[in-house]
Length: 227
Length: 227
DNA sequence: CGGCCTTATCGTCATACTGACGACAAGGAG
DNA sequence: CTCCTTGTCGTCAGTATGACGATAAGGCCG
Image (cartoon, rainbow over all chains, first blue to last red; front, side, top):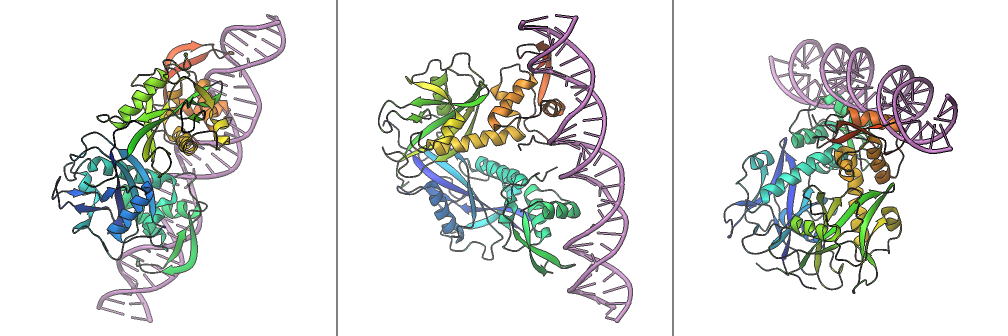
């Protein structure tokens, strides 16, 4: 064994859909380097801790979401020398998709954490500390791609949701309007995507809509398509 | 900065298609731990080295393929405590797709490296050292998935190839026969997938076949479909 | 209460793509 | 020359998609 020891961190890209737009949870750094800049939440992996465990711990610390039901997946690992001025740090990025939280940022240990529109952040490559702009870019692209062929959009929704709410997720993530009628047909006819609960709601206004929950499918055949 | 230093390694899943089957390059370990067992090639990332640079260096050492044209992509990172009995080692896995090499394993520094059928290896969870069985599983699934929506299959082919050779790649990777006529139609009608060179060859026997090279497309719309 | 607004949901139709498979082309082997 | 092998083109029916009309069923307001 002859290796250079390095720091290993888990960084989180926590996405949600709020007010019709895709938003990411960022923290404002209180200390150098990049003091005062926005950054993705994250922290070092502890000695006896698995990578995903570290990511879930950070997620719980930042959002209060300790549930195992939160969708969390590894996106990529970034290890360019010099990406962290403090030393050689390799960062494993995890993507978390959470529903619109009642409590914006509960139990956060970061003094200033807040939801920021993804479009705004991606539009300004200098907004984020470290190489977090690239990490966010990659993570968002992953999320966009996965909506096509997986039922992952439901991870942004509450346990029960209407088809329009689900459509709202697609529109927010893809930044593109979808035809309500074709979307409805596609979603309800794709085996295992959603299952009706039998109940209805009028919370979206207009005619009462059926409520659905996530189905059992893990992939969508055939996929939904972006423009 | 308060972190536990860890070793960071780059491991390679080098895949090729030979004799109609998907094969992976493995080395037989000469030292403990797991002495005598098969393992994925790999090694520690050097202090001033980027992760992908480390992976390309290992690839060149194992196969003699130093070309930038070899397709190399990061798959995932594995960091379970205890996955390496020597200490805390986090491993970043890279998937490499190479054409059928004239020289099987040139310039290898590993005494015994060889191509092994992926199906055989995956069928025996105890064949590989460390958590390499899982890593290989993930990498192969990534490769299978990417053939659907990207022109990546061409990475397994020489610069010029026939449609049947390309089909052979799909059949080997997916382990499934495809209809030659429908495959031909699909590939030649998908914009930017392949471009004819104008030449023909009879190396596959039968009627002379047109030769093609990779096109410029990066994704296939719509994708090819597995069963 | 009745009309209007909003969203939900169903239906139609032309077009595109796919899977199954017939048919013919064009070399090589014997 | 004939057969065998592989390449390439075509046909046809079934399925999915995009565009969009039409109707359903609540809430709101006067």
